Image (cartoon, rainbow, N blue to C red; front, side, top):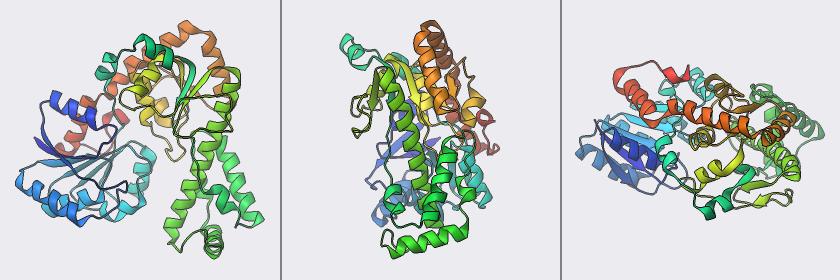
Length: 397
């Protein structure tokens, strides 16, 4: 097998290349800036990528996330395109390129997979993401790093902003109240994401007209507007949950926050800025007594990469309930799953006081997560692409 990898400095890229070498799979990389928009159509890129593809006798192209320009080049050359997606949701601007028969798009969130299947897009597959435990086990903390990264509780991730507050200003009292009631209800419920089902077309159309009249948004299509509202509502729910949990815990315990933006509403956290995902982040996970995962709400049932990274580094994981997390890991054995904000706070305080239990759970989780190695996941991906396996991988059932 010979692969052409589109390389764009993705977080998983270096581990992917390391493991492909270990598996003795031949590959070449193609690096060319496509910007941050996977839905961009770049004729210069398509022309040059296509030339390399035609001349290289490749069996398939592979990339982290799905890129429209790569898909077009592969479809033109009739070469399979393997897109392993770690973003959720995917960009709306790639939808018109998802139907190409050369596509094999692997999604980690089963609900997103189901949604595309219901839309008649048969080029998608469901498989969880992967972690390189071998590399993470080799990382060692110096005495200085232990002092830097050691914490009672840590959270690595964005605190999220959105246009929600801005868009509220143009809405009627009823529309503001309805959105608030949806947010407050969804915010307290884990395991079921129902916002989209309760945003009826008439309500959305009225809100769309009001926001366009106020020049808050440009005129857009109905589906694009729905997705934009869903994005902002999801960001607002995530922002509120993260703020409440972190604010409460940081007032009671030493808390380190690794995020791009320092938040004035969180005066008690130890703000640590950003940390490199490949080297610094695993050391945070190793040195923290408790690592929080508070999943972005548009990841409906799947396991975000942070779950695998924390467990792979040997860290203790306290996470919100997600259906696929509960399928693959036992709460209280491999990790600890909370089902409300109050539950998260109670469990964090319990495990800070019970060190031996905490260490045993971290050890179990580190062992359990090895079933999501790159080797195992890639073997399934290649078997699906070249061997015709069913869409749902065995590790996702």
